[in-house]
Length: 424
Image 1 (cartoon, helix red, strand yellow):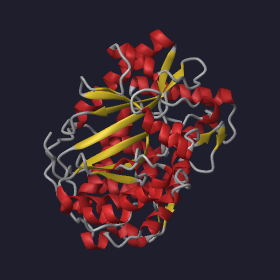
Image 2 (image 1 turned 135 degrees about the vertical axis):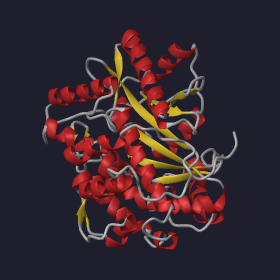
Image 3 (image 1 turned 120 degrees about the vertical axis):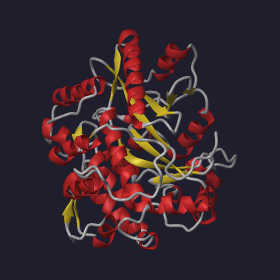
Image 4 (image 1 turned 180 degrees about the vertical axis):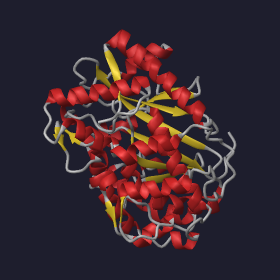
């Protein structure tokens, strides 16, 4: 396929848990699910608009649009159709179902984790040997990955700078993992809480998490990729993991495919919410690319550690986080020196989707039309009621029983089946 230019292509990847329909415990049967669908165990199912694939953990299945030019309305229709198909297989053959949200609320990874034992197993075995992939940050995490296309060094630099700025804002809208091992976690986004500490053994792999600013692809390879490969080489003498996908920063370039992938978004209760959040951040990135509020040079001034500190607030408090970083806020045209997460989203939503129907200027010609769906309505749900994590906590309380957790998470499974938002 030809290389797509800046803003021309967009991809989404959705990760879901497979759980028992009665107990909601995780069930490591994705190999059997794929075999039932296509007649054999494979890593990828690619004979449709929305492909299936395995993940590291045997209880997680991923869905993704294989055509980066697929418009959002068709993407949504396709994802919903595959969810229905998967749930049909799971319910009729395995007494299981898909479960949304970014962490299983009572899974014990050391006891419940089973790694994918088929294709690419040498990669998974290498990860497991070096890092011990039985923790929450490896096998109990379900996210949505956002992929933005670019072509060449200039487009990469501009896109990378814009995306660095939006990363701390993502948990405000997307946090959906407040419980860990049956207890309320310290943060509303426990998936990112554990993600922040996932690569302590070889810190070069994740760096400061928010990627360092660079001027070119060559500088990225020199400052980020090569030190990462050198750091892991003593543990990986065969070079199994020394590829660009080893990078665990919050946003990573996939130069082979000409795209930049964001990894910070928790998966929501239904794809309608996921795609609305993706629309919000895609639109925000386009405004930054257009230099709607600050120049590219100004966008490059924020350091990775400064941005990580802001992200830490979002991870802990989601829409309730209070931001005082005016140097960061000015990049979004926000003049106040103190603003809550939900107030910030409300102000930005007014700029991205004002009632007049005319948004601020964007820098890329939209060759992948988003369509006429009202994504702002889903964002308003979060502004009014909080992130999914906040709504879950409101429904279960701070110290819920297993029964209370099970009841709420079954409601989330029903939201996924019906394409409905969860309300506390």
